Length: 171
Image (cartoon, rainbow, N blue to C red; front, side, top):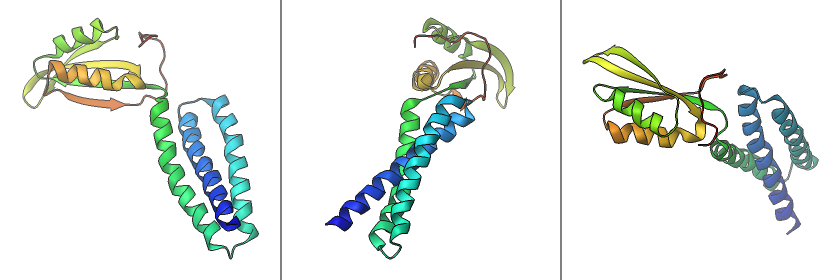
């Protein structure tokens, strides 16, 4: 029974190690230096404890398996955590053949800052709508765009940094 408890311990520590490592890397990319540094402290602690226990007894297959499965589970959990945190900003671009103006008005009505442009597409003139918003607002923005024009072409990009402009505080 002791073997199972240690394997579970290793699995949980390795899963936590990789999950917070995934979040830390995303914070680094977004320039969140202080939070990324603090998370790195715990990431290293969990790693040292988990790997230390595995290295103590390399003949214990349960510990090695727990370490490997913990890595895989941590990757999954890290992606879920990062997605739920929805940190940072996005640029949502909506291209509409005929309803660009209506999409822009609908988004402005919801409080978003919108930049409208005209472009030339395969089928002729198109309306191009750019919205910089919090990442957690992507579902609302895209559903609003599709509600006005079900054929709208929508892309979402993550800008590295955002300076000035109009981004609603409460969304």
